[in-house]
Image (cartoon, rainbow, N blue to C red; front, side, top):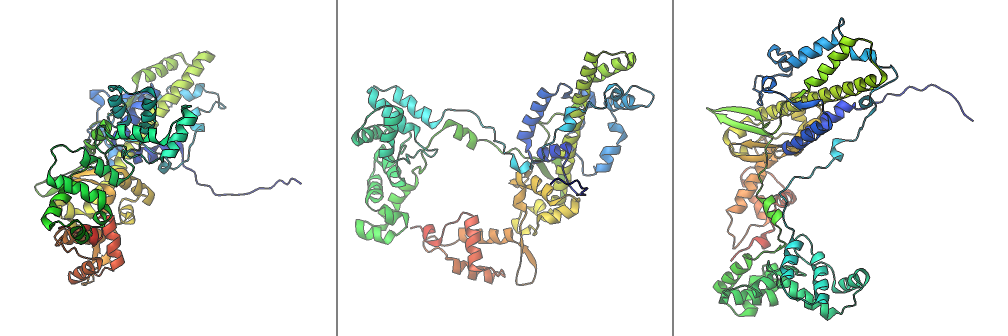
Length: 500
């Protein structure tokens, strides 16, 4: 049975403008540049500001949100037009609209979190490893059947260049997809053909086979090369576990000969998957969102806006509204539709411009708070000067929500005199030393890294020994915590750090 009743609920929803600001805030410089270009293509009312309307790319240390809003010098001709359009005695385009005609932009809302979005880093296009291998196969005279088998093998290589599929699975693929009946010997013969292509080690089915293929095809062979091949072929398990004593005993070689053979092995490429695009990606530079410079002992902060143009509303759209103003109420239904379109585009352009400005202000004041908090580090570059800092510390300083600070920290880079770093790397928890002082966990990691770097590699320090050394330096850190920090620093256990 249906009942009618009143119910009061308190709901909190983000407006479309707030969602836009959050999305723009999360985007780094390169993505923002593409986003602005896309918005200008979609909205004809949005354009680059002329030279007379340009605002400086840099925000000085004295800039505040209040000064940005009240700066009389920044009152542009566009603002004058805006004032004219809103004057009580002048034309208002809302007078021409039916009250029931709500613009589309007010009806659209997407309250998905900006964290749900994913942006791909633009990379220079190039030839893939599969295309590179197929090109080599195309210049050789290969029977049609073997060509199809080899092409299937190449198509099943992963990004590191390994063949992870079993031979019987490839046989089934060829039967179902190519209607080709092949034997295991034929597949292995085609695999041998692909493994002879460049780069050496391609299409291997294991790390051992990958290294062995590179040693077999290595030109200008020496005794060290032959010995390295023997070690990889017959003593790979001992080698991977760094049981060098067992290798010396079983292979009947000297320690010096083993050292030379290991040097040959370490020169090999464990991931031979070769792509030109990967090389282009590895040569790309991180584009920082912030620039921190040190001038006469004073830190200066600027936003990187070199690829972010200043935006304004297209003046032709204002002229169209003036034309309607002069004609007052004498407009047709088609002109009314045009007026609605113009209004929507102008409002969307203004909203986007405001969102960009709000993004820049949020970025600047968040980074300025981090700069003030970690001033000693940014002046010296000494990681041991980093203070313990969590998102809440910066959130309290700038008066923003922790989630907003997190969006800034997780995707933005800062260029300093000492290198370019991801912003979130400056955030760390705190521990107490023997003096009762709070120190950053990053400081402890730096000391741990330095200790391991200076250790005797023939007898590397165990986690227990590292714990004792840190205790002597005044840092009470448990062994399991040292193991966690070591893994975060991508440092292997003592046994795998051993060198001859």
